[in-house]
Figure 1 (cartoon, rainbow, N blue to C red):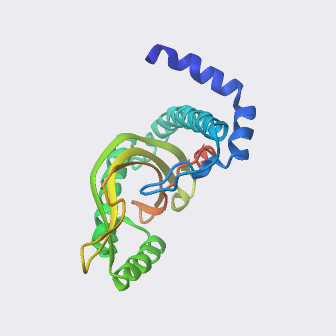
Figure 2: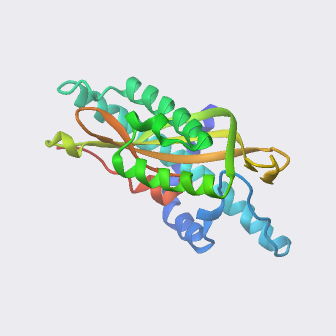
Amino acid sequence: MNHYLPLFFAIMKRSYSVILAILFYFCSTALYARAGGASGGGGNAGRGIGLVVALLNIGLIAYYVWKKNKKAKTLIDQSHQNDLLWDYDQMISLAKEVFERMQNAYMERDMDLVRDIVSDNLYQAYQKKLNWMKVTRSQNIIKNIRFKKIKIVGDEDHEDNSQDRFTVFFKGTMVDYLISDKTGKIYDNSRKKKSIFYDLYYFVRIDNKWVLDNIENKATLGKIVKNKQMIE
């Protein structure tokens, strides 16, 4: 299987403009979500087109994650020579830890559990969401996280270290459902089915430390491609 990947990526690259136009036309950014989701209508032709678009989208995402991650490894190795905070393996390890801790904090509805690894803006924004969940007596239960890919797809090494940042792409599966903390009733994903997630985690450098600054739960092709990669 792996020996076909270079040929597949070459075809994807040559066909990029046509495929991208098709993807945008059919609003493919709505194909992926954490939990739940709506079933679409339409006839067999519509479903067939939707399947083709989904497969093309998956292929392009795989290609650009591979391409940008390959460049990230090269640039981060260069940055590491003058700045030890740029360490690829440590950055991946940190990202995985942050992801897992964030899921736990979200489930426990308490951002104080991750206060040391998030920016002030993210802390405040998410605590408001979690406080509202407490008011509405709703709780997000997150279990059985399994990672399939953890790749750096954006990296900016500036002369001013306070402007440094990097982006991590996550692909994996989890069991994710919503309950009432009063009655225990499940409101979403009542069968507790496993769902696929495609996430982007954005890290910034604060006080010579990497902290999480933003999360996007739908890692679309456009969001992956727009991540910058540079060294000043």
